[in-house]
Image (tube, rainbow over all chains, first blue to last red; front, side, top):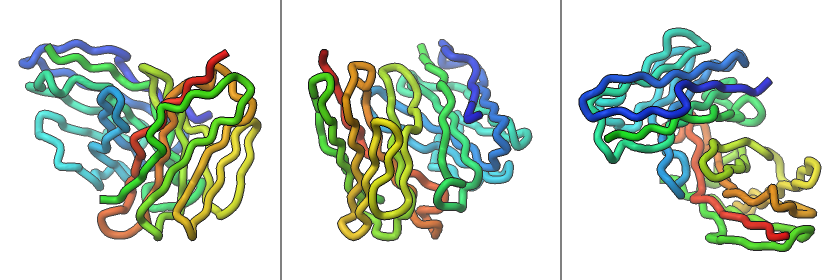
Length: 117
Length: 115
């Protein structure tokens, strides 16, 4: 089973709202990722968690706040977003971060389509 | 910045033909290579991965890796209209310094298979 789930599927929020995106995996993976993807562009890495600790923050604005409550869950808290933050937000997981070969295959969830009005 | 380049596309082939997708990468220390398929409005789906020089076959898909030439390709045999999607090449850099844990994506090649 290579399933990563994300909720909600769609989210519309105003610039003053606070919302959260959720991601869950039950593959026993110890690395989880947040990506942002704009139309016709490849995914853009935002954050990486390894063993529930933040290991990479790609200089993402503080209006995006990640959280990893346990090894299966990953949240992305959103506050005071801008219209240009509208995008597909993807969660992914892999067995490990520091690995090559089969233990690094990243599996993506279905994504949350975010629209900021 | 690690470079991953894909043939620009879009690529259009008739049903039943072989579609050839190409990718080059700049970091000679890269060891793991992935192909993702992404349908419009959907998330990327891992379809092939390769770690050793040579060919790897899975059904109608064949991935080819040549580390000396820093080149990886994906061949789709007997292409079907359902193969129409954007194909993303992704390369994992060496586990050191700034490349640790990162997957570098090409810009993608849009494939259309017409009946």
